[in-house]
Image (cartoon, rainbow, N blue to C red):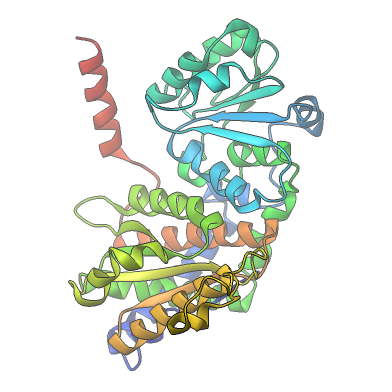
Length: 401
């Protein structure tokens, strides 16, 4: 489980508009529950324990012998898997390499020389330009022989052609699950299974929507963000003080941006990293335009035993002597929240008590439900991305010259 504060409580004391939107959000949530009961939101099936994967433990065992895993994909096809790996990296015994961009300075040569590696290629459409290009950049017949897993829709597309030609293992990407919502489907859970994680523990939707604390926090949070958005406060800053949560921030960024950024509406999600950004962006956050709200990410873990040596610290900074680095980071995080309260800057905090599949699955579920409920309040479709498709079409024109 993760701790959640009373969302934006420092900002919404005695707010009539927030109270009105809280009532509105409760009604929206009740309609959402009816839709869920009537199977009107099929993508959320993958957030249930009853969801049937298009892979078996036999397939997982077949590829578990590989010490290295290479994942190639773009956007929602890979961001969830990166979040999972970063979150559990200290306990995962395998090395996982990610290709989620076209990067001329990337590790293509190193990957070509990897031994005992399997390759997971993910694209819902099966035609994602960058995914095919990255696969081509690391391609060798010997390398991919009996080591290639493709997760895509089972239809006529580029990846299915490659799978048939090179006898790859094919896992179906369900048509009704969009990429950015696919983390608890085959897209994220097959790689997680290869990492040695318990994939069923990620899934608790039925239990969570019956959990009073979870539902109360969800409704309060959605109402608060909607109220802020109506006031023109629509820059959502993830202020992260724990490096293992960096990729969770990037996953959240895509979820919010692609789902809600339509018809002149939206929330602009940005990532910021403490305490590093205290020395570049904090001045803006504290004294710049009042158009931002913040989500603090952290864990309550004590961190490693790395401490500041007392031998090197002068007396004017003696409070640093023998302090654990995690203790120092937490002090900076707490100081920032304290000043935010004084300046009435809206923020919430999400702190993981422990790193477990259940805790990460809960925050995935929380943010997905938050996004869907916000879309209903904003009266937009959270499941398409028409403008992205425009860029894809235009790119093909330039590549065809």
